[in-house]
Image 1 (cartoon, rainbow, N blue to C red):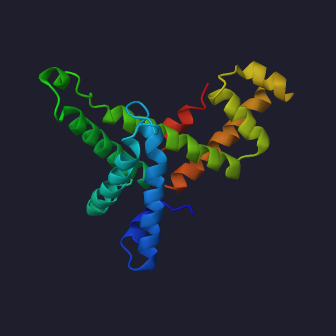
Image 2 (cartoon, rainbow, N blue to C red):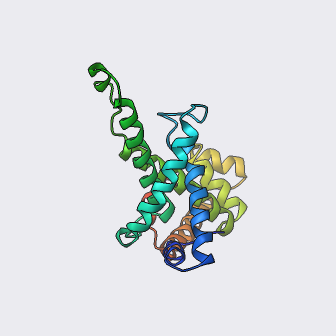
Length: 201
């Protein structure tokens, strides 16, 4: 079930079954995102991983609910929650590394990577959202042209040749596609500038 930021806030402040269902969904999202977000520090095969993510998921939900009024909607709600989860997890790992170790171990304390983790999560979620939007809003030709520009970094002349069209027609195709994305993003309260920059050439 897709929820907007407003849906998450409303459902989490509701009562009864609606709130419980939302909490279950949020917990599943947290658990699904942690292996990727923590892959630089701990892998799912590590004996500590399972208990860590369970503890982090529970603590994240408690902290997110307590801080709902601080969420400003500048990112996706799930991105905000993932960021909280990663910071909690990294704190747990740092504390664990320091317990019972000799002084030399303190020098190997894990550096604070929360900002880079946050950016990584945002980028991943942004790309996932873009894929969904492009599938829903754009034609097959528009999707193909945008992906060739953004992902493959292909020159416009080469894209036009492969698609059997002229450069001017390709310009219009890309322009119309970016305009569709811009309108969709603005409609959903998202800043299109950084996202659309991915598709510029």
